[in-house]
Length: 436
Image (cartoon, rainbow, N blue to C red; front, top):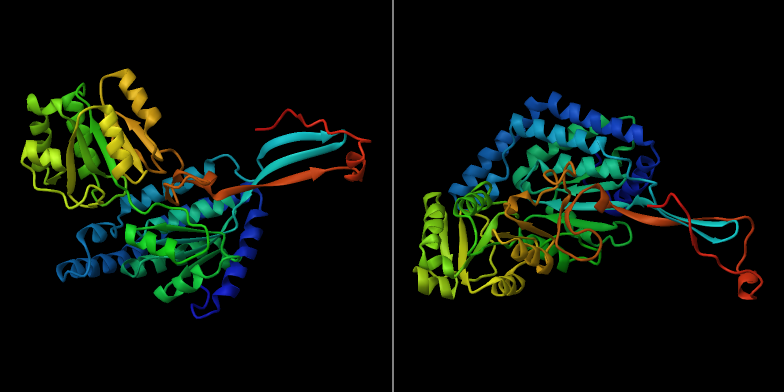
């Protein structure tokens, strides 16, 4: 590992050079590096889990002392099963089609003058993440496959786990690419220095609380790819199958309450109050330990305590409930109070479902499925570097494809612009086969 006191400008330049070296490797070689990383995670499992147990124990103590939320502490845990899943995800990334040098367009500008658009790495990524140490190998694998240099900064609550994971991956890469290709920042002060390196770092990807993401967005001129909050809704329509709705709501709220794709607001069609469907759904959530808060209409009709805000990410066994008159009201509520992360409808009306899917403006929109499916691994991306709710570049779970940009390559035979300016030559702009 590089000296943590070393000048960050020099380190960022070294990371860019290492990334270029990585991108220059053959696809087979980069796939091989990922296989080595997957093997190393499993071979070094005892050391990884031992370090992680210390972080988990310290996190539990912090929860007892009120210095850390239970939701944040829940994200610290690694296990043999989770390492197996991580290794499997890394192998899945390795097995994906080659992302670099893919021809996106091919066009003849004029006779003998051919233009191509090719996929290339973004360059240098800075990923800042909280709690979850499993994010480190996931993000590293995506960067390796896409040929990007990577600087990582994890939370101090998972410092031991991150150090061992970083060391494990670097050892697996030793001799193949410069170690600067994967750099770990370990001090909170480092983040401020890194965020000032516009021109040396190409994109910042934050993974963590809304407060952390907003602080990064406000503190840098580097483009930020991420989401500030995961305020996800599920609209239960009057036509919904009760058993299906119950199952989806419980999964979306209780499977992993701290996840950004957990449901935070349940919207119920007002007709569900009259036949007690609403009451039964809420009771199922209460039985699962979920604390319920209401919007104005839900408070009046269902006797719920008032939610402090309908734009709130609980990240815990709690959620808001509100009643809506119809699909239009549900969509209006989502667009007013949501964060553009993941929205879902539970309904048996095909036309209503298609209208919801078409009209809702969010990174992920689902029908009759839990919001918890909004995940890079579940989408078949192998892993994700984060989830983006922005509209520029990648949106939704960001896998290898989201870490690419493009360049234009022109091949000629001594061609100059003069003859075209004088009208002696003309452009054909003919699309050539093989593009896409």
